[in-house]
Amino acid sequence: MKAFNLHRWNVTPAEAREIQLQLRRRMERDDRIPKVEYVAGADIAFDLRGPGSWRTGAGRAIAGVIVYRFPEMEELERASSILPLTFPYVPGLLSFREIPALLAAFESLRTSPDLIFCDGQGYAHPRRFGLACHLGVLLDVPSIGIAKSLLIGECKEPARRAGSTSALVDSETGEQVGAAVRTVSAVKRVYVSQGHRISLARAVEFTLAVKSGFRIPRPTRDADHLVNQICRARKSLAAAGGAL
Image (cartoon, rainbow, N blue to C red):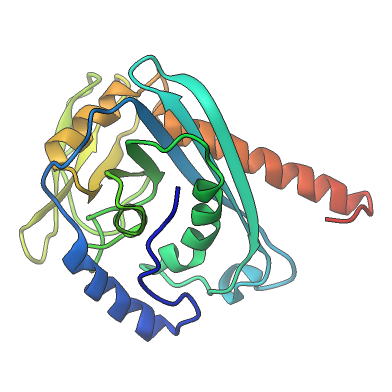
């Protein structure tokens, strides 16, 4: 699958913030979802080298994407890519650090997903344009952000039973930007927000449809395992003196 070439990646943090504001106009927060036959989970790991490499951008991004048949959640395909990091660590701008490698992985897929689950924020973002929004707009595919921690907003604790939710609200504006979701009874919540071409209610519904007995829903959990497995293999090879 191909992405739209909507902006440059070699930009400053100030330029990146302006790009987010510009692309936000393309983001759709209402449901425009095809019949969902294939879903994908996407995640990133980092192979960093040298002191301070996390903040400076030295190292490589390892992207992983796994595609499943929905609703059976039968795995059909997995793809990965490894690219040099070209953007430093800046809170709120992680998409500029991560998406180039993710796009390379998506472009190598034979099966185009109808819905993408991203490990990261969507609309629950200071400029309402997190990684899930950015990726969804570039691919023009419905997308959902599933985050393990808060970037902005406050919420009440959902009830302890699986499927319980509570509103995630921007404390400064009062706007609901996402939902805290209990995927497993009595287990820590996750934070779900819209990416592109989907309503919050449907984003929560699909998230609960792909949970598999763990806090993190299966698509992003499996993608996390994939990229960390690749990262560990690279580090073992480097330690043994092999070429990367």
